[in-house]
Image (cartoon, rainbow, N blue to C red; front, side, top):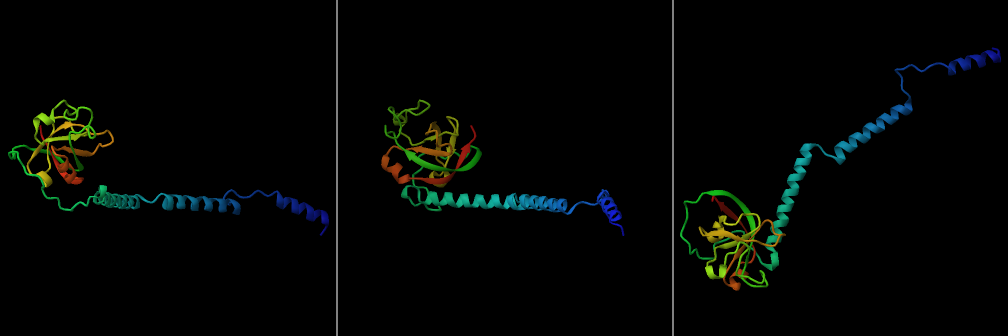
Length: 200
């Protein structure tokens, strides 16, 4: 065959258009790479909702275990799993009051001392004089309104406490119980128990 004819045939083959339904190998590789990346991103980095729920439940269990460990070692005080009442109930039983809601809270105790309160330690945040009152029925809580009545049955039985004081702003989920004697407050230490918030 003549060389010129071969050259013309070669040019004709080069100018042929690629059919629309065929993709190049390079493009196919890119598509596969993108699909693999999407699958990896979706199932490995961001697991399915069911896996996410299991993960959240596991995290909650871990946090609960950590909280229990912190409570058991809080300020070196060992807490019992079962809390028995340690103070006598000097108040009449009030079974007529209805419970609005219950919740578990960390509890501490305090006295009317300048070091623990301010320069007027007997006067609570709502202006009540606990020293003149002389009864251990006052609590401090930032998350409850003044005058709210609560019971702590696991520790104090049917004794009723009234919210008359506030704590430091950093303690949003804690209750501080006012006590006459410093030794009683020290003996009380730190406890985690259920409280009953009573209806007004």
